[in-house]
Image (cartoon, rainbow, N blue to C red; front, side):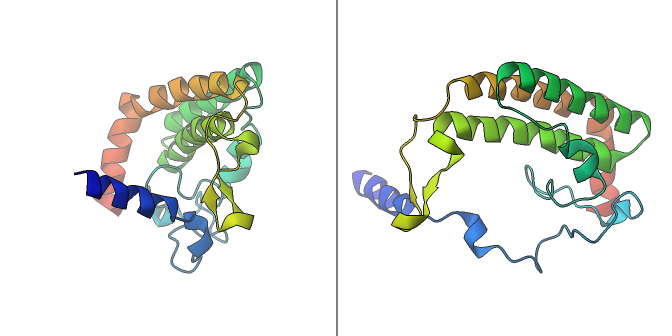
Length: 172
């Protein structure tokens, strides 16, 4: 067991960020598609995938995405959640899913800025070695918590959950 742990630690210490091997051609989301006009081209994906690409939602939602401190995070998450609800009212699953992704990304990015000074997880000058954790901004933990609650509220919305099931059945 101890040997496996040592191997895992050595493996993890040599991991590089996934964005270094990013292949735009193989990526499901494309910046030249208008996903309001062609919602059938939208893929749900894992986590926040596509959030910074899918237009016009990126522009509609992204302008409100902020997490500098808890007051800004509160205002931002409330606005994005309001957009989420409006997309649901319009029966626009893609918009709702994108808003949910922005709420999730508010949580994950704020946590990264809490965990790592300046939000940088890897040191490019040292072979992308992971930087020391726990050196970030404590205010970002409050922002992360605010976004986390709104993200989970969006995910637990029954209308959204049913739309997601239906989307997966129809489009995969």
